[in-house]
Image 1 (cartoon, rainbow, N blue to C red):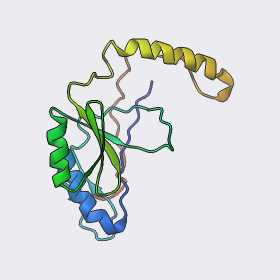
Image 2 (cartoon, rainbow, N blue to C red):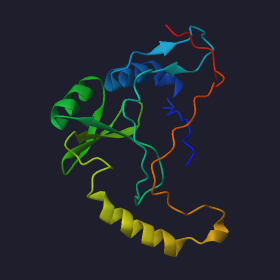
Image 3 (cartoon, rainbow, N blue to C red):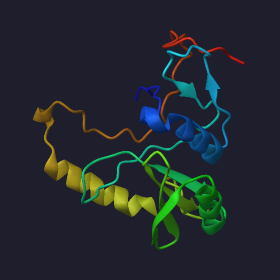
Image 4 (cartoon, rainbow, N blue to C red):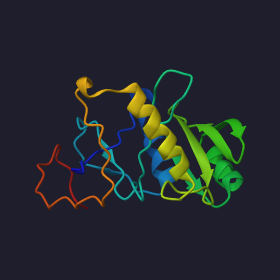
Length: 168
């Protein structure tokens, strides 16, 4: 399977943009970097990706994006992020659902939570694969075959810059 590049953009309203940059920079432990051009609407948080993992979650609400931030002590991290302007929305089992000052929901998950590579996920994967086989057919235009082998690394490529941001 060909690996793709991606960027997570956190859209912020203009009125709260500076607050958003400050909050997300501190929350993710990544120094903010801007091109210096006042018309440039982007501020990068290089190094914020860490060990980014992408999942889809089935919910009984409209679709949206949210971040899961992992911490050794979810209560201490919730307190730290409250001091930066976040608010607690609700406690769920061992994690906190929180709202950033930018209005975005995110979760603080304990570091001890199983990773997606744990064997415990195999049972769910098998169940979901069976559901997917029943729900989808080959006429929908998607390739539903599973690749059980290791992914081939993508060869190095030169990508054009999408915007001008200095490397400092």
